[in-house]
Length: 325
Image: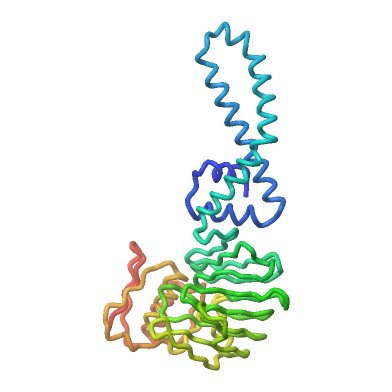
């Protein structure tokens, strides 16, 4: 992050995504926060100095020449005092309100990935999180104090550092809450999908309803809990772990996956729009593997060879049309 980027943020000239990136960077280390504070303070002083210079141009030029040195010296002395007493207050107030506005959950740190992007995040406690495409985690204000709590929007794989005194809690928009001490697991919780999936790789996880303190279920390794949003039901199955977390290594592995769910995954990974032209495909499922390096034409070949589908891709509007042959 450059000083120019920080000034752009201070002057509110970036978009929401840019603001989130700056906020995350500022909160990442004490050195980053110190640089931001220094840049903000200098920007305030430079702005006030500029105002002082511009107001002087309206005075009589002769009087201005005589008074300029005295006024400027006095004004700079005032600025030094102001920077000591006022700027820290303005800075802390600015950070508070801007950070609060940028994150509706009033959290301090937000990490997000865009369409087609996967991202790895290491938290202060050493926990490592892999974000799948179009996903976001929001850290609680008191993260790593009495507990480690965050919210997930999308899909992420967690490798949690064990700390029996500070449980690790993941909240999802559906109301399902996952609690662990130290383990590795995957959660898929996209708002556009019908279910929330929690797959345990190592250790143990407990699933809760947001409104209850009693665990709904405890998972063992190689188990996946699927919560149906519409039916409000929870089911547990034995799964192939590698299939569920293959996205980390650039693969999507489908095993009798409904076509509409397959389409949502392809949209996120390849930044295209998939249109399913017939309701007859609602019961259709797809099995196969898609690589991150595959082209859209590669995907079309896989679909057409494995099924009675006809796929047409329009480059201009980045739309993949799927219909019956």
